[in-house]
Amino acid sequence: MEDEIEQKIPWLFQVDELADKVIREVMIPHGYPKTMQLLNQALSKGSFENLSAQGDSSTHFDYAQRKLLTTSIPQILIDLVEFSLQKPAWLDLEKVEIGAKLCRRSGTRGFMVLRNYCLMGGYESSAINKPLIFTGALKKGAAKRTTETTDFWVKVVAEHALRNPQAGIRECILIRLMHSYARVSILNGEGWRKDDWGEPLNQWDMVATNLGFSLVFLDGIRSLGVNAKPEEAEGLFHLWKYIGYLLGIPAELLPDTEEQAIRELYAWTITQPPADADTQELARALMFEPLSSNFPSKMWQKKRVIQLHLAYNYFFLGADSCRAMGLPVKGWSIFPFMLKNITRLQEIYYRTSEKAFENGVRKRRKNQEMVARLYLEGAKQKTENI
Image (cartoon, rainbow, N blue to C red; front, side):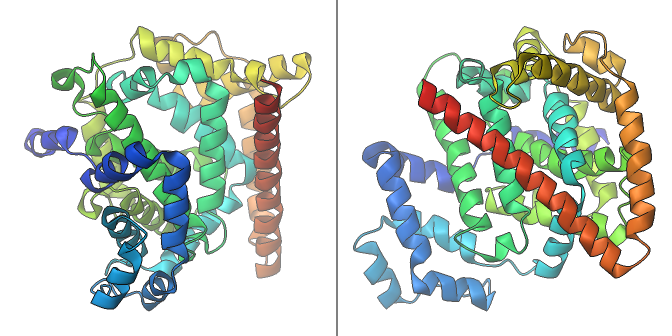
């Protein structure tokens, strides 16, 4: 295992060079609104749509198409969109949909896992979270990050979202550019300790984040009673391998199976420095996020939600990890176990027939969309009040 970890250390110093070039050559000179206009133009071109539909990773634009597009769109942006629309040879879109369906089937349990296991658990390592400190995530507030993460996740796991350049693929491009913009901004400033933390948002940290959405998420929903079949688990890893690829992570760094994912996460975890004052501050900001959010609206509801999330933090992460991040004594510890038992009963019913199963998926998905909409409406209202 030590030799395997040594081989992965260089990943700490590898970054998404293609997206970084887009930031330096397009977004910084032209600004965000113009870059988004150019990106939308590129994605709306028929040649791109045809390329996406063909699903041939060896297909490239012909000279006439390139000449037409480059008259208005910078070449580096065309290269990024072309990469995003070409389907790699290993991609199986049916497996992607199986994985996305599992995410939808998790309902609001999935949100509990994402927030209180994946996101909060990530604060246990100090190095991976330094970009959040350098980009001012604390000042912007945990509610903003929670809302953005929820919105992205809900969009990319929508039915067949990753077959559509204007839907899931576009969302991945936007997040990819956001990561690169943060990295370029950090490196243009001062104080980043590359020898201690690697590059900002480096490829190994990106792999670890990806594993949070696949392996950690899978463990979380299972802990809450969701019965994920082997083909669903396989689909989940394939889904996040494709999303990771669209976010600029080399596909060979991303696992195909749960066993590979466990090994990858273990290798990353044992090389990470523990939580420090910065990450404890991030963890507490996430804990108190309901106070700064417009959802829920009543103060007594916000305080209850904090206690509810604390219960899930301790349920997923354990007391030692929570104490390391400076989280107070757990809240209403009975709730995760109640939800687990309710979910187990629902899972038994959903497996009685295909109709019951599909109705369960639709019902839980509607709950996801409702909560996501409330978060977005609250964020919009908060912005308008500033």
